[in-house]
Image (cartoon, rainbow, N blue to C red; front, side, top):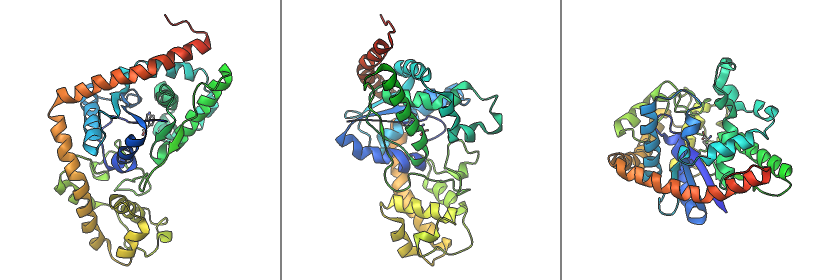
Length: 331
Ligand code: TRP
């Protein structure tokens, strides 16, 4: 059993990354050999500023550590340091029918009207993601709800490769969609995912936000005029209420219904301060730890060097075996 997952170093890590992903990895790393990647090659599928990309790559490492990923137990590294990701990505891209990629909703969302001018990398993104996982023959992949379709594609690609070579070379990776709030939405629009790429910083809570910034963003967070409902069944028609209740439930590690048992019938003006307190208590200590790690770049880089070394040790024989199965000589 082996786990692989990754976060993109685009803009600052936010509570969506924490509640939907990283937080759930902390428990998993005790039971599984775990590999946590900073996927810089995925980040450049859209334009990035080089100086910022490097800083943000280190920032994701700081977030991993601050959230409780143990760098001794787990492997933390950046994708570009293990050349096998790009190499296996190519091998797999040759086995991936275009029709499968045409179905990917994330590409359609991200490319929008610019379908002909965005880079090939944005289109091929899910193939590289499959390569990330299969390069380590990872069996389980903890991700947020939004990555489910990419994971299904990774399983299809693994199956296609196995059929091609006639052996069960790659295990079909199992998605693990864990915990409450696997999908944290924008504070400005409850129908859109909380995203590092959304223009307004008010739309998301970053892990390094101060208590004041958190309070201000939640105060301005979009709501509707009704009091909170008594039942979760009434939430889906009210996306902003659903999102804030979901976040509160995730922060308190409970069912959203339990939050409504307490706040049903109350106004947002009463709920928001409680949410702010819970958020500040959970996030500010993480931000403080991140700042401490960020102040010691040599420490972070040391983790990335060691992680890359350990990752290569696993990846190298798997890539060699993959080449061999295809009849590709690798000297
Ligand atoms: N696409 C993922 C995201 O945006 C990041 C990612 C890249 C990933 N490669 C991965 C996640 C492999 C899990 C496994 O969240």
